[in-house]
Length: 596
Image (cartoon, rainbow, N blue to C red; front, side, top):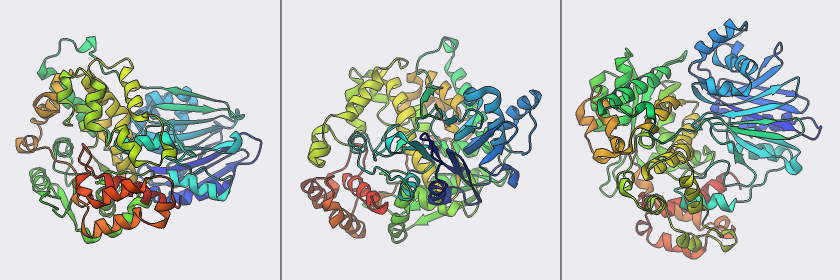
């Protein structure tokens, strides 16, 4: 798990090693164990290393294979690298290191860009071919690992990095960076629950390589892009005659395999244990796989307005049941508020969800004990755990019903909030409409699950967890996003997922592993009430941000709208129970923190 960066020139000029070095420094937290920069003519690569597999310097990056004429920078992990290594050895390849990085190099040489189809893992990488001058960029199927892109002015070249502010840092060294707000992305941020889908980012100067995408760039700048994976949310004939018991068995077997895959490491692997079904099931399966002395971690906050800020009673019971080495972390408001600045600085993009500060502070503590954790992230999107799925079983208007519960505001509210120069079309509704209209999703529930698992999940929960954990050099692995499990879940009939308030097939499979009181408890979440019910010091903090000279001079939010939110923050809560004031303040604070 690392941070990668690079510059590729199309104009015959030498790539800027200084710019790549600046990007390396800007994402140092992603790889505190080592660094490297390589410059060769029109290409320069940078790498920050977090040592997880093959802890020796033989696996350092950028990795140059002189015999094959390939240079690689790689972020992530290939869980099946040992199997692939054996296949490659049978083809005659010889290895000088013991980790997965060199396997990516050899696999690319053996199978070309299609090597990504053989990888089980989470990854983003760039590889340069010495003989042809081509550079290939790739990202994993579910977009677990980030990859940001910034074109140089006049199409003179391209930069890439794991952390968007790293691209800004490079722009300060050479060629500049377009930090203007992208109006389409802004609409998504304010309307589509702060989800800004790839390739967009909030800034015009940066784009994201979409998940499951390979981008090949020729030396003259010509490019070809291919999506190599897309799950089908339809009923597969191979599964037509399965009983409910068959589905439970298949789900449990696939999840067990996913959890076992994510044990691959040369360091200890812990678990982020909320006490909910998903993380508890991960702990239970690890116990069944023979893991002893497993380190587990939970976090809690103060109660605000009667809303409890922790779920320790559940995480404690799971830790006791499976005999884990459990660590409880309680964060009072006096600690959380001062940490917000560092949390926002760590955000690759503005992340409005209240639990970002929770993951940030949790990761700080967890990184003192382990370098790798498994997490229950993704189960709700894969197995229909959210409240908006069951009602959609009978939906006659999938788009309208989805927007009603998921969108933070309609277009009319958006027009009252945003400076007129940035307002035009209802981009978010149009985006969801186009996605719902694509083939491969049979029912309204299937359409919602597809957009949530391939779009929303990537650019909200998964991005948040990766960013907040990597801010402390901590690797988070997500077994529910094993692509084979995702493919299987997509074929499960919707009625088996939404039954009994959602995730029925997963809950029933889990009864073989974890206590029923964990499964049947009311659905919880990662609560940080102080950022929903803004009051006291938190409200003062937010007021200072949104009424600052910097904010008032920026042509972004309309002053009357901001004043309305400040006058009664608790009257302006989104359908998903978020604070509209915090959403506005977080974006402004992110822009100020990154000097935009």
